[in-house]
Image 1 (cartoon, one colour):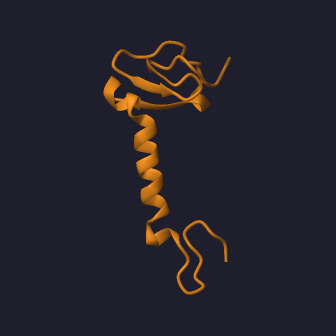
Image 2 (tube, helix red, strand yellow; image 1 turned 180 degrees about the vertical axis):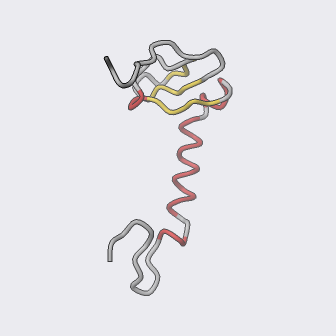
Length: 78
């Protein structure tokens, strides 16, 4: 008996952006490693790459993630 049941069909109203195909899909059609989501709307899923770029820029410019006078940032070992 499997510990986890593989979900083959998505739920109506769950939207994903497939990184492999560059398309929006309702319910998970492609494997998890190849998609962003779930999103509440098709529109949000369609803008997934833009949202990711904006978030990456925010994180890259966040001073809490940069070393200050020799201190290590979050997630870095001493």
